[in-house]
Length: 280
Image (cartoon, rainbow, N blue to C red):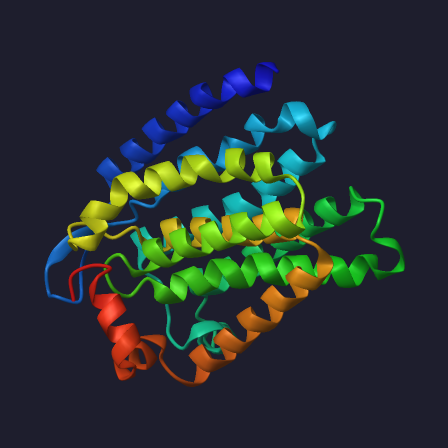
């Protein structure tokens, strides 16, 4: 139970660290309107989300879940923040980052894919080996879980091209996932405790994000997406995880060949809805 009381202490310390890093090394970038705004403020979401496993440690019976949460979430969030402040993004999605690496140019996006991929595999391994139902399909389930976590993180990142879009889509998916967990999965209370800190910080930042005053950046979108992926991997049945994986793969194939923003603009309904999410 003492771990629960440690959470606000650790969360406050990490928040102060994020505040100091942003103050000293934070970066301002030009947004789509041509205005210069601070980026990387999603570090505040990561600061409160990373230690959230402490809130459920009293009910898990082991530290496997806490470690899985941290090793999958933190590398994606931290490397996303480095992407924000260093600006070594590269282009062309996953394929663009790997093409740059083959040419000898290592981008932070490439590091995020490699190191984040190792972290998600480690987290998925800890989740699945902690279950008794994996059986002979253990390694297939580990791969499925890891892909769901990694692709969820990148999916929210793909949406973070206009103010408010990534945040509102996360909130919608968070609600849908919560309903699915309560109806078909397990650990609904644990999911609420794990995800609520990130939701609260996001809601606090969203008014500034929607008005294009700040950019949450990859630190925020990677963290939020990884939370959705971890919730899916940890609390939903295999068939729903498989459905999520198919949808995520389809979206990423589309994003590699086309533009999600262009698809939104081309649809009158989606364009009208998108305009309500923030300034355009």
